[in-house]
Length: 189
Image (cartoon, rainbow, N blue to C red):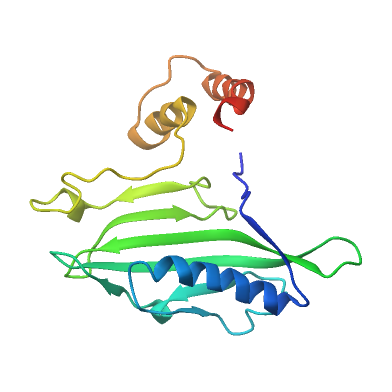
């Protein structure tokens, strides 16, 4: 099942470029909390196109954050510019992919939040990668509480089978999980 984004940024704007500028300003405002580096938009990224555009922090180079030991941060957000409202000049920015990565002082990734729901991608829902470097002695993850969105029991059950080779006890286990997701959809809102 394809996980779809509910991450729209509806903006009243005279142009798509104004909508993108507001979206980028929002991202910049957030990253300003941890770095003075600037976010940049890919070439042509202020106009609607058939392919997604990209926002990169620090032109794709890791940003050095404060802390002891120092932490590096990468940000990539892909988006589409979507016209909304017939005849009215209202635009929305739809996030279609993101990668947020934390790295150690040797530039080794230790934690990464991903969402890349493209065709052919094995994992199309938002997910977290914990790299081998995170398991080393002195890793910043030793006592960290890792942020996630709500985690459904169905997702942990499916991950156990798909990622860790757990053998399901029922032949129709995927159907059972799908039915449970539908039945409990309102619980996470």
